[in-house]
Length: 224
Image (tube, rainbow, N blue to C red; front, side, top):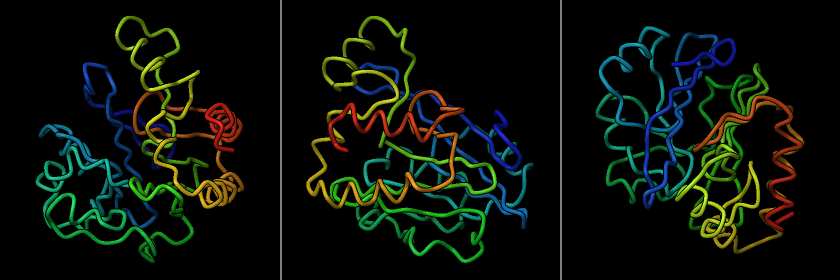
């Protein structure tokens, strides 16, 4: 577990997609109350579960898009009894009850905000802003793999997934945008927020210049 800032931690796990090294990033946020938000699920080993409990009282689990169901059941099993938040329709995907991400729980007020990314109904991604650390947390909106990747990883990401450079939007996400105007309106609202760091669902954390790099990635994809 790596501490990125006060009350903000990152855990990283291996995840292979069609033979490529995608990885899965898990973010842990500690609220002023001491309760924890665990963003994105993983096959948490016992030691990591204990390390998370040592940070505070786990309060909520969340997945921020429909296609992030890979480890939902495993995460729920490691932290039983917690409210599990997800986008509309997530309950049907994972086959267990989940609660909506919006409106965000009142206990998060002033510390964590949630923004729906409209216009891509097959994905229904939500961005999460940790206000005190100026950190935006996304799932598949953009990826940020190492620019020096080689072999199958590089071929797949550049020629199949369609990344021009990193951070960037995948060809699949772009194809899922069905209402360009609604998507752009959502992104304008997000880009107006005060953030510098971006934690992506897959790849390296963008530690600075996050807003500018997100804008560049959206322009590269031709969606803004």
